[in-house]
Image (cartoon, rainbow, N blue to C red; front, top):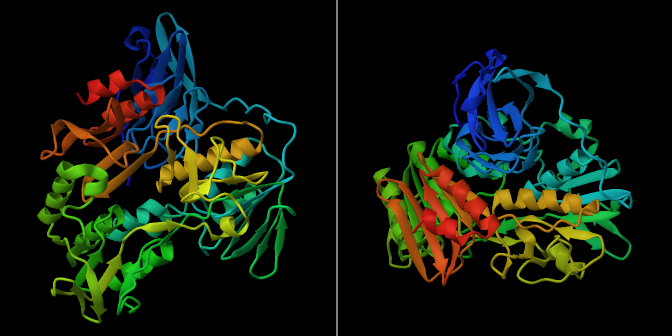
Length: 516
């Protein structure tokens, strides 16, 4: 989970170093006061911040400078060099800031300094209260951003899940594999929400939205008035409809409780069948193999992830899992599930005392639809994530937004996208009028191999490859006409960051240099 201990590498910056060692646009890793510190220069300005990403512990010195920010190589969190603030998810907490002094041609990192106070809210006409429906990635990030932007009104965060907001991507990765303790999973403690005066209500079900009366009603009869409303209701797993699909050893993975149940069952199970060669299905397969179970994966595709990653990467991912003992049954579908087996449409019966289904999710749009919001394969929003109803925003898995880069409307189911949309929606509720223009990003982990993916490609004309997929050192570009739609990388985190920045700039020539 962590990027590793940086072990106070480099010079002792408190003792000073030759200023010529830090070129314009460069970074230097060192340490001061017993902590890893990153120094960076842009022109005449020099900054020093904590060198460890607050998300998963990535080494920021191995990241990318973009303007007066630095991006983490692991999962593309972005920090301000001026303030240390985590200005783009998935990191939510800041890094420390240090004072810097230049004297006699040497730079000295002094003690920590308090960040400059945030500016006053951008608009004097702000809602008197904000209600957020959904306490997942988007909802939690929005609530936090409201307080970071010094919003003083009431913030009400409503979640169906009984657990405090948590790190959902880890449920199918290290936590499920047994490599991460449960105390790593919550994003924040319950005390955090109390300290931030975020009214967190868990295990509650919102039953209706009254856009004219500007209120939401709970199933228990409670009603909450809002000045602004964010819908962040996420997605629901697609269920198997077949004989035996509801047997007790058949599981889905969406919530922390789901992951706990799979972990509990895996302790006694010996043979597992994963239905669905999706990202979540394959991550579950890897986690269960790590726990020592025999694992078979069933899917209708000819290769896993072929519709998302193409044939070359799909074949490599299959090989990786087979090297770890996974047995694939592709081109097949289950027709029934028995207490001890999954029966396929080709007649094969796969022994299983644990079945995990990962065949996709559907956006949870029932509330929005019943409220009369415009629906377009999700909740339709404008560039600022506003829905068709006044003062109602949507973010995360349900939101379909106009993507300036592709010219299409997109709805994607990525954790980082949801968090960043929640942050933008929060700022826009406060009058920022900021378009959501982040390039989609996600990562997927399989054993010790991580895949990073920037951009969005539902169909493409060709796939170009730089590096060696078999050696798991590559960048793969998905292109349509003259445009690079997306780039996947394995073992090339800097290239992934550069691709993201190039897509933001609209710099196709830079993308062609990354993957000719």
